[in-house]
Amino acid sequence: LNNSHFLDKVRSDSPEILDDYTVISGVGIQSFSADLMKAVSRKPIDYNKLNSFLATCNKLNILLKIDIILGLPFETEQSYFSGLNYILEYIKGTDHTLQLALLQVLPGSLLENMASRYGLIYSKVAPHIVLQTATMTTDNLAMCTKITGLASRIINSALRSCFFKTKSIVQCSSIELIQKIYERVISENSLRNIKFIKENSIDDDYWGGEIFSDIPSEFLYNIMQNIERGI
Image (cartoon, rainbow, N blue to C red):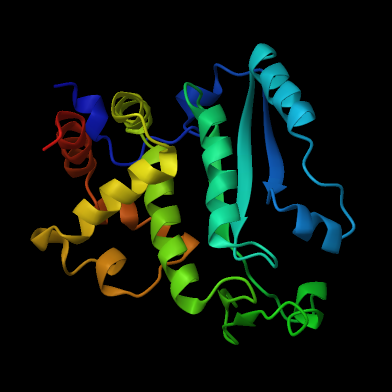
Protein backbone atom coordinates (compact mmCIF):
# COMPACT_ATOMS: atom_id res chain seq x y z
CA LEU A 1 0.00 0.00 0.00
CA ASN A 2 1.38 3.40 -1.00
CA ASN A 3 1.73 5.59 2.11
CA SER A 4 1.10 8.68 -0.01
CA HIS A 5 -2.59 7.80 0.27
CA PHE A 6 -2.41 8.59 3.95
CA LEU A 7 -0.90 12.07 3.90
CA ASP A 8 -3.47 13.95 5.92
CA LYS A 9 -3.06 17.33 4.29
CA VAL A 10 -1.58 17.23 0.80
CA ARG A 11 -2.99 20.36 -0.81
CA SER A 12 -2.77 21.68 -4.34
CA ASP A 13 -1.22 24.86 -2.92
CA SER A 14 1.84 22.92 -1.73
CA PRO A 15 4.99 24.67 -3.02
CA GLU A 16 6.29 21.61 -4.88
CA ILE A 17 3.00 21.35 -6.80
CA LEU A 18 2.80 25.06 -7.61
CA ASP A 19 6.22 24.93 -9.31
CA ASP A 20 4.69 22.85 -12.09
CA TYR A 21 2.16 25.50 -13.14
CA THR A 22 2.45 28.59 -15.30
CA VAL A 23 -0.28 30.62 -13.59
CA ILE A 24 -2.33 30.22 -10.40
CA SER A 25 -5.76 31.82 -10.46
CA GLY A 26 -8.98 31.98 -8.44
CA VAL A 27 -12.39 31.39 -10.01
CA GLY A 28 -15.34 32.71 -8.02
CA ILE A 29 -18.16 30.58 -9.41
CA GLN A 30 -19.89 30.66 -5.99
CA SER A 31 -23.20 29.25 -7.24
CA PHE A 32 -24.84 27.66 -10.29
CA SER A 33 -28.31 28.88 -9.28
CA ALA A 34 -29.97 30.84 -12.11
CA ASP A 35 -32.43 32.38 -9.63
CA LEU A 36 -29.59 33.70 -7.50
CA MET A 37 -27.75 35.12 -10.50
CA LYS A 38 -30.90 36.94 -11.55
CA ALA A 39 -31.44 38.34 -8.04
CA VAL A 40 -27.94 39.87 -7.95
CA SER A 41 -28.17 41.13 -11.56
CA ARG A 42 -25.64 38.65 -12.90
CA LYS A 43 -25.96 36.41 -15.92
CA PRO A 44 -26.57 32.73 -15.19
CA ILE A 45 -23.70 30.33 -15.71
CA ASP A 46 -23.20 29.51 -19.40
CA TYR A 47 -22.05 25.90 -19.20
CA ASN A 48 -20.62 25.88 -22.71
CA LYS A 49 -18.47 28.92 -21.98
CA LEU A 50 -17.46 27.53 -18.59
CA ASN A 51 -16.48 24.19 -20.12
CA SER A 52 -14.41 26.01 -22.75
CA PHE A 53 -12.74 28.17 -20.10
CA LEU A 54 -11.88 25.21 -17.87
CA ALA A 55 -10.50 23.24 -20.82
CA THR A 56 -8.35 26.22 -21.83
CA CYS A 57 -6.98 26.50 -18.29
CA ASN A 58 -5.88 22.88 -18.44
CA LYS A 59 -4.32 23.39 -21.86
CA LEU A 60 -2.38 26.46 -20.69
CA ASN A 61 -1.24 24.78 -17.48
CA ILE A 62 -3.20 27.12 -15.20
CA LEU A 63 -3.90 25.94 -11.66
CA LEU A 64 -7.31 27.04 -10.35
CA LYS A 65 -8.76 27.68 -6.92
CA ILE A 66 -12.50 27.25 -7.49
CA ASP A 67 -14.87 28.93 -5.02
CA ILE A 68 -18.32 27.53 -4.21
CA ILE A 69 -20.47 28.98 -1.42
CA LEU A 70 -23.01 27.06 0.65
CA GLY A 71 -26.08 28.87 1.98
CA LEU A 72 -26.69 31.51 -0.65
CA PRO A 73 -30.24 32.83 -1.26
CA PHE A 74 -32.40 30.72 -3.60
CA GLU A 75 -30.01 27.77 -3.33
CA THR A 76 -31.70 24.50 -2.43
CA GLU A 77 -30.05 21.33 -1.24
CA GLN A 78 -30.69 19.81 -4.68
CA SER A 79 -29.33 22.78 -6.67
CA TYR A 80 -26.27 23.09 -4.43
CA PHE A 81 -25.35 19.43 -4.75
CA SER A 82 -26.05 19.50 -8.48
CA GLY A 83 -23.54 22.33 -8.90
CA LEU A 84 -21.02 20.57 -6.68
CA ASN A 85 -21.38 17.38 -8.73
CA TYR A 86 -20.71 19.35 -11.90
CA ILE A 87 -17.53 21.01 -10.68
CA LEU A 88 -16.20 17.84 -9.07
CA GLU A 89 -16.27 16.13 -12.46
CA TYR A 90 -14.02 18.86 -13.79
CA ILE A 91 -11.60 18.62 -10.85
CA LYS A 92 -11.07 14.91 -11.47
CA GLY A 93 -7.53 14.27 -12.68
CA THR A 94 -6.30 17.79 -11.84
CA ASP A 95 -4.55 19.56 -8.97
CA HIS A 96 -7.17 22.31 -8.78
CA THR A 97 -8.30 23.27 -5.28
CA LEU A 98 -11.98 23.27 -4.40
CA GLN A 99 -12.55 26.17 -2.01
CA LEU A 100 -15.87 25.46 -0.29
CA ALA A 101 -17.18 28.16 2.03
CA LEU A 102 -20.20 28.70 4.24
CA LEU A 103 -21.97 31.99 3.58
CA GLN A 104 -21.21 34.79 6.03
CA VAL A 105 -23.64 37.70 6.45
CA LEU A 106 -21.26 40.48 7.46
CA PRO A 107 -22.49 43.52 9.41
CA GLY A 108 -23.10 46.51 7.16
CA SER A 109 -23.00 44.45 3.98
CA LEU A 110 -25.57 44.53 1.21
CA LEU A 111 -26.43 40.94 2.08
CA GLU A 112 -27.27 41.96 5.65
CA ASN A 113 -29.66 44.60 4.35
CA MET A 114 -31.34 41.99 2.16
CA ALA A 115 -31.37 39.21 4.77
CA SER A 116 -35.05 39.48 5.69
CA ARG A 117 -36.07 39.52 2.01
CA TYR A 118 -34.21 36.26 1.37
CA GLY A 119 -35.13 34.62 4.67
CA LEU A 120 -31.55 34.50 5.87
CA ILE A 121 -31.11 33.57 9.52
CA TYR A 122 -27.51 33.87 10.63
CA SER A 123 -25.28 34.04 13.68
CA LYS A 124 -25.14 37.52 15.22
CA VAL A 125 -21.61 36.87 16.46
CA ALA A 126 -18.54 36.47 14.27
CA PRO A 127 -18.07 34.82 11.82
CA HIS A 128 -21.82 35.49 11.17
CA ILE A 129 -22.45 32.24 9.31
CA VAL A 130 -25.84 31.54 7.77
CA LEU A 131 -27.99 29.04 9.68
CA GLN A 132 -31.13 28.92 7.54
CA THR A 133 -32.52 30.40 4.34
CA ALA A 134 -35.93 30.61 2.71
CA THR A 135 -35.04 27.57 0.61
CA MET A 136 -32.96 25.58 3.12
CA THR A 137 -34.16 24.61 6.59
CA THR A 138 -31.74 24.57 9.51
CA ASP A 139 -31.57 20.77 9.29
CA ASN A 140 -31.02 20.81 5.51
CA LEU A 141 -28.22 23.32 5.81
CA ALA A 142 -26.63 21.48 8.73
CA MET A 143 -26.54 18.25 6.72
CA CYS A 144 -25.10 20.12 3.75
CA THR A 145 -22.25 21.36 5.95
CA LYS A 146 -21.35 17.76 6.82
CA ILE A 147 -21.37 16.57 3.20
CA THR A 148 -19.50 19.69 2.10
CA GLY A 149 -16.90 19.25 4.83
CA LEU A 150 -16.34 15.62 3.89
CA ALA A 151 -16.08 16.56 0.21
CA SER A 152 -13.43 19.14 1.04
CA ARG A 153 -11.60 16.65 3.28
CA ILE A 154 -11.35 14.08 0.50
CA ILE A 155 -10.97 16.17 -2.64
CA ASN A 156 -8.35 18.55 -1.23
CA SER A 157 -6.06 15.73 -0.19
CA ALA A 158 -4.08 12.82 -1.59
CA LEU A 159 -7.30 10.79 -1.48
CA ARG A 160 -8.66 12.54 -4.59
CA SER A 161 -7.56 9.89 -7.09
CA CYS A 162 -8.82 7.10 -4.81
CA PHE A 163 -12.19 8.81 -4.59
CA PHE A 164 -12.68 9.06 -8.34
CA LYS A 165 -11.49 5.50 -8.82
CA THR A 166 -14.13 4.29 -6.36
CA LYS A 167 -16.77 6.48 -8.00
CA SER A 168 -15.97 4.92 -11.38
CA ILE A 169 -16.22 1.40 -10.00
CA VAL A 170 -19.52 1.83 -8.17
CA GLN A 171 -20.95 4.06 -10.92
CA CYS A 172 -22.58 6.77 -8.87
CA SER A 173 -22.37 10.54 -8.65
CA SER A 174 -19.73 12.25 -6.53
CA ILE A 175 -22.30 13.42 -3.98
CA GLU A 176 -23.85 9.94 -3.78
CA LEU A 177 -20.42 8.48 -3.01
CA ILE A 178 -19.69 11.15 -0.39
CA GLN A 179 -23.06 10.34 1.23
CA LYS A 180 -22.13 6.64 1.32
CA ILE A 181 -18.81 7.53 2.98
CA TYR A 182 -20.60 9.87 5.40
CA GLU A 183 -22.89 7.08 6.63
CA ARG A 184 -19.87 4.93 7.40
CA VAL A 185 -17.99 7.76 9.12
CA ILE A 186 -20.84 8.58 11.51
CA SER A 187 -21.32 4.90 12.38
CA GLU A 188 -17.65 4.48 13.39
CA ASN A 189 -17.51 4.17 17.18
CA SER A 190 -13.88 5.34 17.42
CA LEU A 191 -14.84 8.70 15.92
CA ARG A 192 -17.85 9.38 18.13
CA ASN A 193 -16.18 12.24 20.01
CA ILE A 194 -14.98 14.29 17.04
CA LYS A 195 -16.62 17.60 16.19
CA PHE A 196 -17.80 16.25 12.82
CA ILE A 197 -20.12 13.83 14.61
CA LYS A 198 -20.85 15.60 17.90
CA GLU A 199 -21.86 18.96 16.43
CA ASN A 200 -25.12 19.44 14.53
CA SER A 201 -23.28 21.39 11.82
CA ILE A 202 -19.70 22.34 11.00
CA ASP A 203 -18.12 25.37 9.36
CA ASP A 204 -15.40 26.01 6.81
CA ASP A 205 -12.78 26.71 9.48
CA TYR A 206 -13.26 23.13 10.64
CA TRP A 207 -13.39 21.48 7.23
CA GLY A 208 -10.32 23.43 6.14
CA GLY A 209 -8.27 22.32 9.11
CA GLU A 210 -9.21 20.12 12.06
CA ILE A 211 -11.17 17.62 9.99
CA PHE A 212 -7.91 16.41 8.46
CA SER A 213 -6.72 15.06 11.82
CA ASP A 214 -10.19 14.08 13.08
CA ILE A 215 -10.90 11.76 10.14
CA PRO A 216 -7.64 10.02 9.17
CA SER A 217 -6.85 9.40 5.52
CA GLU A 218 -6.20 5.70 6.10
CA PHE A 219 -9.68 5.32 7.58
CA LEU A 220 -11.29 7.05 4.57
CA TYR A 221 -9.18 5.04 2.15
CA ASN A 222 -10.32 1.79 3.77
CA ILE A 223 -13.96 2.92 3.58
CA MET A 224 -13.62 3.51 -0.15
CA GLN A 225 -11.94 0.14 -0.64
CA ASN A 226 -14.82 -1.57 1.19
CA ILE A 227 -17.40 0.30 -0.89
CA GLU A 228 -15.63 -0.89 -4.06
CA ARG A 229 -15.81 -4.48 -2.79
CA GLY A 230 -19.43 -4.14 -1.73
CA ILE A 231 -18.57 -4.75 1.91
